[in-house]
Length: 151
Image (cartoon, rainbow, N blue to C red; front, side, top):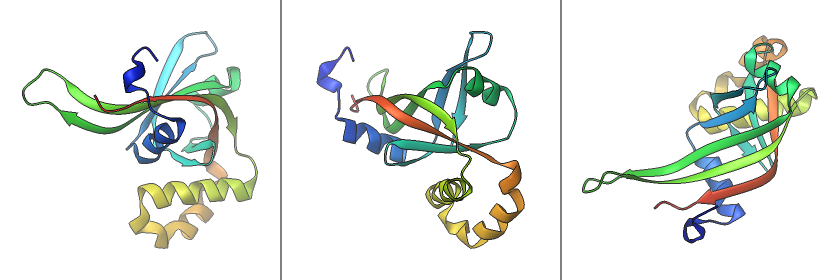
């Protein structure tokens, strides 16, 4: 990070990942081109989970190159008297892998739903039973993380 005065700890950067509304995952396509996609994510330990369709462009990217870079924005504050916005962010580099163990897959979906739609958890069991076979779950295992404080 260039601005060392704005750098935050690993723990603080992971907390930004925990509270971001959504994150943007950047990967490389099989054609060696950049590709980015917005995701709903949840973190548990050193893993960031998200769900996906079973097929598609991003899945092709994950299978061609398992490296990913996740960008998370936490709190933001528009400045009324300046032409800027204060924000905190975290950049997470890691290895992408599909979650194939059914218990881990269900657990990841449950913590995703608890984070993003806790008021609808009464419908979780029914929804998982209906969609588990056609829903992919992936994780980004954290290798490196940097973050900046709101400034």
